[in-house]
Length: 390
Image 1 (cartoon, rainbow, N blue to C red):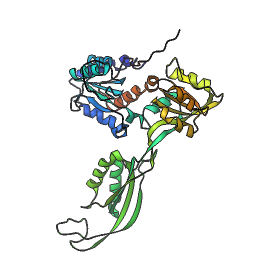
Image 2 (image 1 turned 135 degrees about the vertical axis):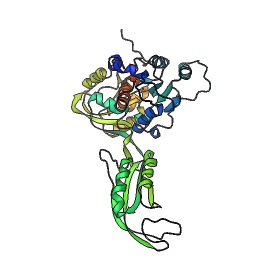
Image 3 (image 1 turned 120 degrees about the vertical axis):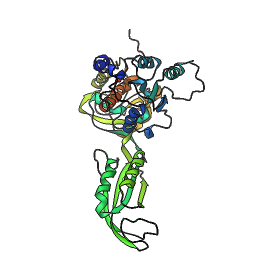
């Protein structure tokens, strides 16, 4: 069960929530860490991630992390004097036309507003990063050599900028610091090409070199770096701030390349092959479920494992195309089991069960950034699904 150890883990810091020694922390300070880790730009069009209730400028008194933002979770937040609840699933997913308290969504929103509790959801944007929800599932199985099952495309940009030869190293360093030049497990990646640039400074200009109204020749270096598009503002800001030219000649290209660090699902390998029955037993133990629905066993050893937390039936074809032996997800419909067509073992471990470790992911991230701040895991069991066993 999520959060069963939080009393022992945080008893020593709960009192700090109201302590005069605590530095003032705004809710936006917490959200910046989350959004730097999983950019809101990566959420799917249908999603409603982000700040749902509350104000980012409020002083934060404490954080409670949960998979779902239910009434009981918000009541717990109020009891623990936490005015920020961070959940994976958005409490408002579809549009609300009335807020009368007629269902659990409306009641939760009313409670949040009446008690000045900010509710923030980090949903499909957290699903769509390599170190997100699916990485925690893979870790439970001990998978190695993991990669995105269905990478997203058209997310990358390439910046080409021309700079005097004696200034290019300094500018390149600033671009790296701003987030440019990361490719997979490599960083500070760039391309440089030496050439000759020409320009004529006009009246009123303040050229780095050359004379007004006289054509000048400059030894220049063309620098090229790539970056995900949501970092463009900070990268261009670093370029303009650190470039010696008054007018910076630069080009931005939209790349069609797949971005291997973002996308849906994950695929990796077990260290050694195991039987299908051994895998199902492993799933049952590691995810704490009493019931796993699956297709007919093929009687084969399995090693290549594809997975997707939550409802992931749309990625079945991707798992098959990448020669996965098993695809693990949840919320599968009857006819989707037929779609496996004996090409792999298809296993449904339950929606909550697949995403339960997201709470640990968010907790670990925030605790690393805010060592002396009250960050708690909920003790509320939010899984709405129960299994009957006689």
